[in-house]
Length: 205
Image (tube, rainbow, N blue to C red):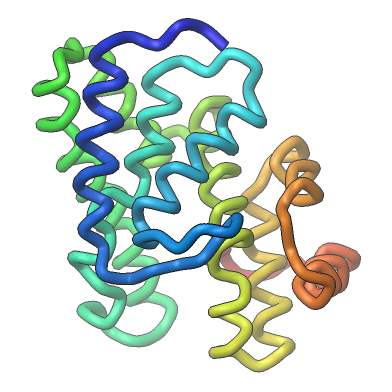
C-alpha cells in the first residue's frame, strides 16, 4: 500500500478520538471498544483487504462512515421502513458534513475533502467503484459486529431477510470477503442459509 501522508495520520487520530466517545460498546476480534470506533477501524481494514492500493480519501471515508453515529439514534425517527431509510440517509449526510472540519484542520485540500464526503454519502453508487468499496466495507462491518445483536431482536425469517438485503448491496468481491469474517459456527450457519437462496425484494439495512 502507498505511503500515507502526515495529514492522513492527523485526520485518522481526530476521527478515532471523536468515535471513542461512543457510549455503546462492542467486543470484536478479542477487544471491547466503542462501537463507532470499532466500525471505523474495521471498515478501513476491510477497504485495505478489498483494494490493493487504496487512496487516502477512500480510507478516510471508511474510517468516518459512522462518525459520531450514536448522537442521532434511530429512535429519534419514526418507526417503520420509511423512518429507517430517512434516518440512514440523514446520517450519511451528517457524517459527510461533520468530517469536513476534521479534514480541513488536518491540512487536506478542498478536492480531497469533497471526494471523501462523496464516498461517505455513497454518491454514484451504481457507477463509482470506490463508493461500492465503502458500501462493501460497511456491510462487512455490520455482519462482523452486529449480526448477534440483530439476531437477538428479530425472528428467524426476518433475520435471514436482513442478511439477504445486506448481501444485495455488496459486490462480488465484497461477498467473497464474507468468508474472511471471524464468526462462530451458529453465525456462519445463518450466513450460509441466507446466502444460499437470496430473495429479490426490499432494501438492505
